[in-house]
Image (cartoon, rainbow, N blue to C red; front, side, top):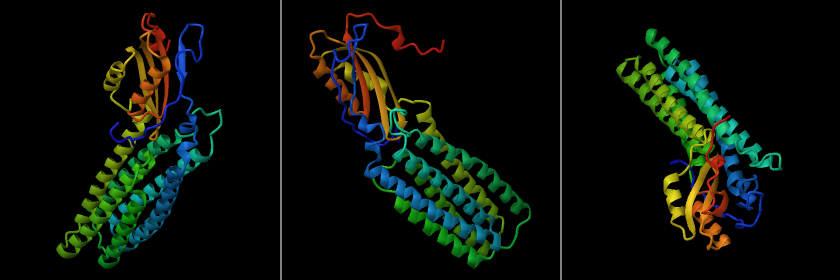
Length: 334
């Protein structure tokens, strides 16, 4: 997935002979669970992400109050639409902060195999969905001002719009930099849209002031609505890929690389998916040369997966002479 952060996790595990189940297949399970049970992922980067989201939420709530008051007092629907945009963004940041905070501190016991990290894509999806009704409200208000234009208090409106732009740029500064989680990327896209909205409001206010064409104000609001739709689409696509288990790398290329590894006859089965933007899981069923060193071969397969950002892998080796097992690739629900 193109917008997935790069992670290289150390994979651990033994080789054939580690379990010895009744089918004669031996499983290698990565034992480095600290990467996926909520411990390692809640280190300094996780704490920084949580603090950033909390700070941005507070900044944008204050900005919303200022722009809402200005839009209502001074008659600019563009400013009012930008205020509503900022409100929903602030709520999105609050939800993202809550999801990050909870995932970092709860669900780390055996009841949740991968902790509560699924809250991250859930929060991002809800945030994207919440943007859509906001578009309807903005378009409605823009239409009302198109039908019945009102006078705009230029000076105060312009001052508040500039203040909103400063708030957005400050928030971008807080969020941007280094490796961003899905929720941080969502916040970043929101903030870019907000900054663009603030600039559009400033331009529209100046245009109305110097041309006297008041229709510029509702047209600007409509353009802001389009930016919001774009932001919502980014969030819904990103979180939807995780929920629907879209493979986060090129399966054919990874399969080919594994099959080029010394001792590998064939990759009978390979699956990969994401728990959240920071945790990639993979399972591989590999047919091995009977003369190969099982432990060394397992390590080589893990290394291939690690170079493709897999944090937690389970590799199963079996002799290439064994028959394929239908259950490995059967995905029906009967």
